Length: 253
Image (cartoon, rainbow, N blue to C red; front, side, top):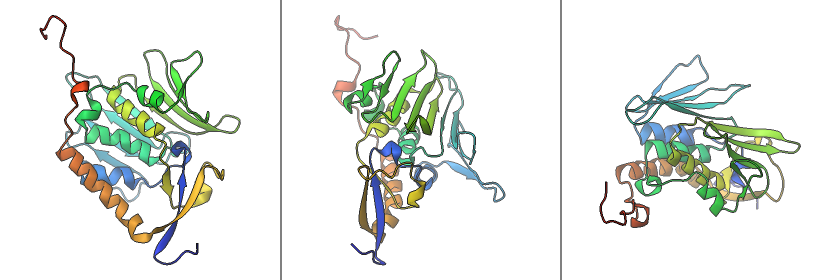
């Protein structure tokens, strides 16, 4: 189909962990506009720093050729120790956004009880041999936890070449990890309209090209901002199945 001024050629990639980084605004704009995170501006530095309204969380995006591009540090609270998370440059923004959304605009129904491994099990990921972890069906993504310590999510291609890695402190709240793993295991393809040469994969079975109305592309971010704002204003009520069961003696603590 020939491209017209009213359409944009978009490539949809699945599995999504091989789609490349995407547009950072997918993460930063909703945090600022829908969740009230403040940002600092330094035109001489190629970085973005956002802080949560309560000043407990600090998200930094900074190009680091030999390190993680995204880092999030959270200060301790009365009932939880400090923790951090970091994400490599090619971590898809849709997957990072699931994590930051769960932190900034929590959905009560999704966070009432959370096992970070459960979304992977349901998506058909396989337990890793001899480790506390799971491997994606295509063998290119691996989620593991080192004992009771930190979590690592690693995507590789061809001869173990790393594409990206996410790292989570041992104290990272489980519901945030579960939000990340659910987005990671989501089979839905993600769109990319930037330079195809920046994608980790060009395998024809993983990439589908479509002509999309330009207005649809332009409106996608605004629609996401509105959706996050609505979620933050009206969190879902947890279903009864997720509520704490009543002890058999009929008394609760």
